Length: 358
Image 1 (tube, helix red, strand yellow):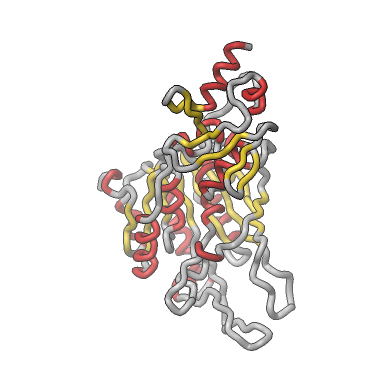
Image 2: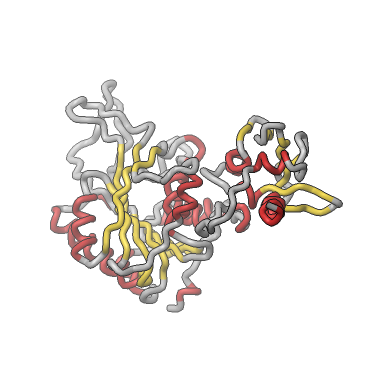
């Protein structure tokens, strides 16, 4: 089957079978959140004897480590065939399975780049009090081979981290509030739904606009939602029909950002640094002037110190743009415009004018 016929679709069924219909070396990045194999022998209870809504689904039950290892080897081998030579793969897991995943990844020839610790700010408590609270999960980021020329958007990650190098420990809350999908009885639809901010960081760090992302354990579609928002293409595979239904609904309600609204991923060239405040000092922008995005959905007022204010949001051109869109980061230079002589002019164009004049 041609890859174009599979893009931005959710394939329903067994992933080991459906992975076989995807053309070899056709996807740029894979994000996989496989079963944890928690090996739970009984229901977990809180101190008040209420039942913890944990992972009890059949898809997380394996009769032995050998069965789980064979399952893992099979889907990872198929994924390796599908991945482009310069592509990369992310797998996420807990202490129950991440070491087995890493072992099999290396045995199949993948080259591990990083292990990323996702530190949860609001982890589930340890109700029995007999071990440390599990407050993190681990992601392994690997390429198809040691010689792969993979994508790493270093400057984007640095910008996201306040102009500091992004470290391999990420502090992000678990999925809660309106983002957490629940049924009419208030029960979680998927027990291990990942937060969009986590997947956003994965996708922004290791893909480009229009890249193809495969998720062989699609669940309720977080990878598809974020891929669509960030102007990437996706292929999802999921066996549970309820999860598929919910994922399609979420993706349909997701708006794709324009390229100028997405944090830039091209490396910085050696250019003179021009702070936004310099535009004010040189009279290109004046305090009190309104900035707007290209689609005229949001506005912000420029303050004398070079910061912006928009409703309850205050800060730099980057932080206010990100806050208004509900994104973890945004390049304010490409997001904001001023109106001059009836036309919208990018503040990045004003910055370029300053560079030419200095």
